[in-house]
Length: 373
View (tube, rainbow, N blue to C red):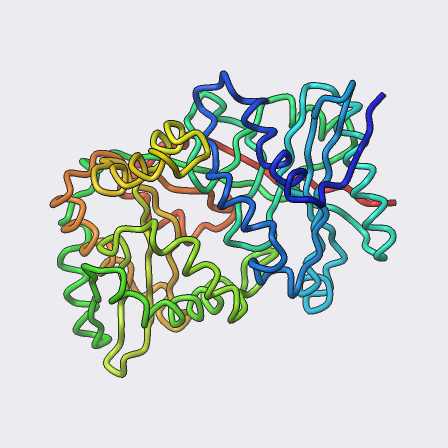
């Protein structure tokens, strides 16, 4: 008999976070989160997303053993402002037993109907800065800090339960040796002169902070037209500053500014923390933070996390300025490989940015949709 129970207490939520550690304990490609970081994300007193969203966390038990977990999310900003009658689900993990998946999905349907919603989509998080999608290809690739990993049977469960593919994403990789500066070196000089633009580089985290709010404003503006985009609120900006900025080498954040001091483009690259997180085993102490610190300083692999360009400057070659700055930084750091984190397969503009670097697709992932009635 399968029992579904809502995780509400600190102990239950910790069990929710730790279930994948058991499920994937022998899998060399699963990258664990930091347990305390996950718990903060689920804390309604800490994460400001709960000002615009409701979330329910459920654990499935079989013979008194946890066999599945699911977060059920209603982003009311998405429902009310965009008129998308959608209930989200994420942080979905399960043993290979479709009856467990079904009982969890039935709970999504129940909560969705109770709130007069029409369909579900997942796996997705609270917002556009959370993890997204279930792997459909690339199970032999090591995951990243900002992606979920899953077994192939997840997709089989979704399909058997009547889900259809909603959005598709690709991840790719290219060696830094593929980057030829002559492709953008001259162009970026012309673009800087034509539009009176200048790059901004950083050497310390404290110097970045005055620009972070501008960056999130530009993120909201440049991504507004993408599917299911939900803008980042003022309090969420503060939360993400705390959550992410200290993880990122300051020299891996690049801004482009116009003559009036307006931010027109930005990019964030992160060192690869995958191996360090595996060594940390979900804990910062006693030694986890040392593994992360070493990766931050020494990793020869980097992941392009976010890149945004103001609509007024899109298709004007501004990214050439960003690529030039990264080329100098990566050359100094001895970077070997560049990873691209999940990008919508129909976001042709972003994919065209990378074509000259000859990236190879390493993973594909999808979100899945099912009508509630």
